[in-house]
Image (cartoon, rainbow over the protein chains, first blue to last red):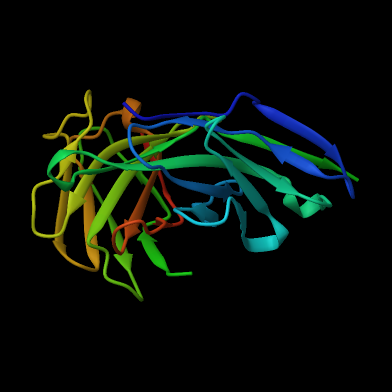
Length: 116
Length: 115
C-alpha cells in the first residue's frame, strides 16, 4: 500500500530565510508526487508535481521540490520565505491499482509558520 | 490551473435530514473525482473515488449507503450525506482529475454542521 509521511507537524522559519518541508513516500511503482497548500477554511491549491524527468521541480510562488529516488523523498523548498507563505502544506502520492483504479494519498500536513 | 466549483461552502442542517454537495469542473473534463473529509487540524481522509458513469469506489470504513456519490457527467459529481448526524459534521472537499498523471484540482470545500 502506498503511503506518505510528513515528519514535522510544524516548521517555523524567519522571513527571508530558506525553508524546507519534508516528505517521504512509499509506493510500489513509479511515483507521481505532488505538493499542495491549504489556507484556513479553503480547499487545496496545487503547487507542483513530479512525474518524470528532472529531479528538481519548480512550481508556483517560488516553491521547488527535489525528488530523491534513493531516499524516497520529495522535500519542498523555497530560497526565501515570505510571511504570506504561512499555511498548511500537504505532500501527496498518486498510484494506479489494478483495473485502472487510482488512489491519491496525502500526508498528514505540515504547518508552516513564517515569522516576520 | 483548472477550476473546480464546490457548493455550498457552508451548510447547517438538522439531524436526520439529507444534504447534497455539488462539485463541478468548470474548464476541464474530470474523468475521475475524489471526495475527501477533513477533520480540524488533520489531513484529508479519502472517502471515495468515482469515475464518470461508474459506481464510486469507497474506502474501507466509509458507509456507501450514508455517503451517496454520483458522477453522472464529466463535469459534475455530487455527495449526498443521508440522514445526517452531528458526527457527520466536517469539512468535505472534492477534487477532479482530467487524466493520467495529472494533478488534482480541488474545490473550496463545504463546511457541514449537523445540529
